[in-house]
Image (tube, rainbow, N blue to C red; front, top):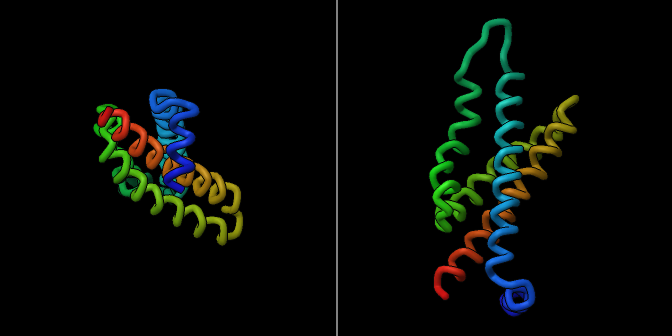
Length: 129
């Protein structure tokens, strides 16, 4: 696996791979944030309450400084947090009438995980050069 990644890095260049991973992180982060906000609003009953929305959004928002600051370590931690949203998406698939939202959330969280891990690897290697 390591050899394959090093071959990909030499073929495409670290700078290009870092930029592509960053684009994937930003796109999937925004989409996952929108999906989670939407899910928080759907849980509302007759009376609006911000607690469910904040509970779903807060773990993602805490990583905004790392994404804006382009810190590799913060992206690695965000990758692990995104697995919680992946698990939540998989659980939503099993609920009646929630299959499409669950699949979207799981795929978006998986894209965020992949992008974050790629960015953390390529950015750290880029900084070592």
